[in-house]
Image 1: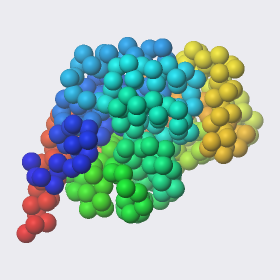
Image 2 (image 1 turned 135 degrees about the vertical axis):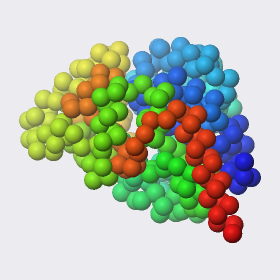
Image 3 (image 1 turned 120 degrees about the vertical axis):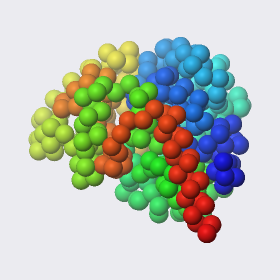
Image 4 (image 1 turned 30 degrees about the vertical axis):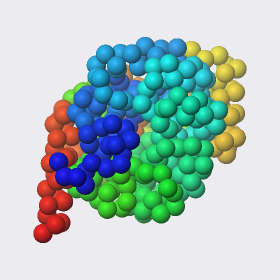
Length: 351
């Protein structure tokens, strides 16, 4: 392997290749995380869609499937977040990943326990703040990324953040192959983070009908909408999104209330805990009342597609790369392919 591919990210995380598998809700299961780690990358378990009291068991399950380092992603403002922090510290996971509403007291606990803090940021100012709060590595996601996303293209945002902060930067948003990895290194990043590309692998748990909708999507079918939960979110257009885009205020309120009740059942949180979490998120993210009310829509509607296999009535979070992905390799095949292409690209550039 080229020495250019053994970056600071590899050294800090103890991994072979500078590739991170992101923590997609309902998708980044112990099986997918372990497959990513066993293939030489760094996988992150999606604890945001696991009941807090079950997170430790899922960490142990991952540990049974791999002896390689892995991380856990969660929402610091969500009900039960303290339980998740306890589980990460007890199990001595390699890294903690988070995005919204970072809590200094949680970050301090991770630092004291030797757990690396790796937040995801979609704006330069957020990356600077993350480093001030103790981030060891920052994942910077450009507008091409799936799910909640910003408007600045990855190529511009990553280069900007690399110049602003001292911490290592991992590029996310629009990556799927070895040429992208080399491009990220040229921007100054120490590696890439991918979600959609890992979502479409054989170890991914998404049902066949949902996978078909991703594979059939063209680039123009992947769009940003605010109609899912009030915040910009990149998804594959489907019947639900089309209907949401043409809906009215009353239909949004009704759907939000239904989602809130469904999320309460899934999370096991009390109404008081959910309201407290929603208000904390509203303050930190400066959300409007309508955005706060709609916050539960995303996890509930994504679950419908990812677990229930309903790509018509569920939400399909997706990076722009879904429009150019046409196969479902194993995780090991995918990573081997990326590394081989990156090495070939580097050789070509040297001549």
